[in-house]
Image (cartoon, rainbow over all chains, first blue to last red):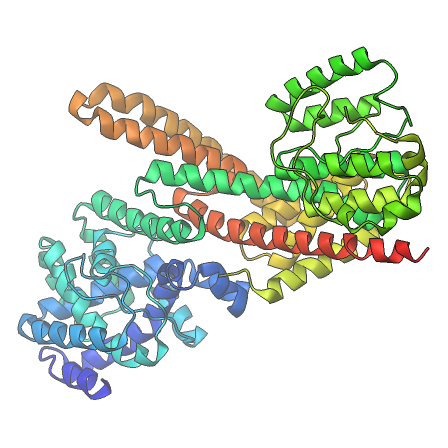
Amino acid sequence: MQPNGREMAGGDGGSGPQADDFFDQMLSTLPSAWADLGGAGGKSPWELSASAGADDHSAQAPFGDDSSALLTARLRQHQIGGDNKSSSPVMLQLSDLHRHGLAGGGGGEEGGGFSPLPLFTDRSAPAREEMEGGFKSPNATGGDHAVFNGFGMHGAAAVQQQFGQGGSLSPQSMGAPAASSGGAPTGTTSSAGGGGAAPPRQQRVRARRGQATDPHSIAERLRRERIAERMKSLQELVPNANKTDKASMLDEIIDYVKFLQLQVKVLSMSRLGGAAGMAPLVASMSSEGNSSGGAKGSAAAKTNDNGENGGGDGGGGLRVTEHQVAKMMEEDMGTAMQYLQGKGLCLMPISLASAISSATSSASLLSRPSLRHPAAAVGQLQDGNSGAAAATSPASANGAGGDDARAPVSDDGGAGGAKQ
Amino acid sequence: MQGSKQFKRAILKNLVLGLRKRGVASRDMSFHERKSAVRHAADAALAAARGTAPCWSRSLAAELSRGQDAQLRPATSASEEYTPRKMTMCKRISRRRRSIRARPKSKATAKAADVLARVMVRRRTRALRDIVPGGRGMDECTLLGETLDYAVSLKAQVDTMQLLLRALQAPKNPMLMQQ
């Protein structure tokens, strides 16, 4: 590949020495552009920054458009210098290269018909700064985006070993799509290109500004491509993401993030018992009940801190409470749990309740391994005598078992608990 | 991608340290106090473990420090980041409103579906902005990137917390049995 690159560089015709200079600068600027753009696909930009340090990423971010503008300008000069003949063999060889080496990320959609060249690298900072100083132009004109389109900005995995050869090849290949997508600017470029082998930076800037071929659509295209990249990677991340529609995909993403946030919230509630150690009975047990209830969206282990025999006293009143709670559970688990907690009641798996009621001492409770396992079936929320038993997470069962073991007071008083 | 063990370990370490520092193990906290303390510690652990590279991490850290009335973190950089973001956000909102108002009038009915799709997408993007911390001052493209990173980090945080929970709760019973 290296010889190929050299050949092409040599066979450039129009500008020999200029080509070398051009390529050198290409090689230095391309990585910065690509590190910003190509990251989203194979390697997330965050991962890149996480590994390489925040500074690199943030430093590279502003370079993207500038270096692309530079590239475009350079390429146009080159191309229009009369290398149309050589560009096609360049493209052919380029595509061969790509077929061989690259994990191409769906290139070929843009004019060039070849997969993109990922150009991550660790180019020297001075080269980059030099480029930046020269090409800090505010406008990303149409030319820039044409270049990117030609490149096909689907960040393939970084293939650093190909960078050297790819860098020399890419400029010419980019020149082809750039020319194909923006025919009009050639006139202005040639005027600027006549400036010489290594035109001063100001001239290049001027040339760029002159090319206003439909900047809005090209900018739009660039933006859309970026967004499509990111949507694709999000699609891989979010489960159940077989939607092709952007709106529904966003829906899925939103739901997923909300779900994760809810999980964190619930886990932080459940941590109370664990981190707190032997917390007071009411607080720990009811809190753990609430937490695991929130976690699985179902009721959690119950304890009765009042020591009331739920079944005995005020059966009618308790039945009303039951109905109330069942109704509240349908709408919101959290308020149901709080309601129960306010009354000094809680939810309990049936097996645990039966274990408690049949147990005569806390020692026998402790010895029962069943306490540690999820006791009840899912979704059995009923009014009436069968009680409101529901699925419990292992955490809550553990918590219940642990707390029951730790809190003999509630066991004694809570025979039968609030289970009805 | 980022559910790396190193990241999770960092979260775990930060979380444990933070919990210990906040005195969560004491008994005299109320339920809500403790819950918010743990949540706070978890978010701080996540933001600290993730570093300052992604935007959401910085804004999350800024939010947390703002929430703490006791500590007045200097965080001038955070506030500086926020004010320009608010400005851009306001501009964006007004721009968005203008464009939404303008388009339906000018397009033909044939393009109404297209417009509707765009409106739907915009609505959801807005919702996403509300969810992701610091999503207010970003354009759509960076927002998606931030969301990606945020989702992965959240997943790691959840896994870590579950791990910790299981570790804390499981061995209690055998210990008590010996009593």
